[in-house]
Image (cartoon, helix red, strand yellow):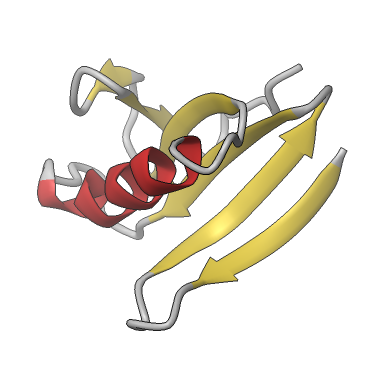
Amino acid sequence: GQFWYYRDSTAREVDLLYVMNGKVHFIETKWSSQPDKKSSVVMETIASQLKSKSVKLGSTTLISRTENPYHLTEKTITNSIFDFHLPN
């Protein structure tokens, strides 16, 4: 796979785009052990906008210092930096 950093013309950014098997996976990183939903808003917005441009969407993941994975939103899962595995 390939890694990319994404920043648009309005300075919105996603820490990592991971491209694998034709899908783009969106990955944000946060130092917090309990990130809140607003941490994923920009990432989900950018994913939605790119989807409309014929990009095949993969997962949206937030990596943090959380102890256990959980759904931050309907679309975004929060994983521990210690347990995170790249999507296939």
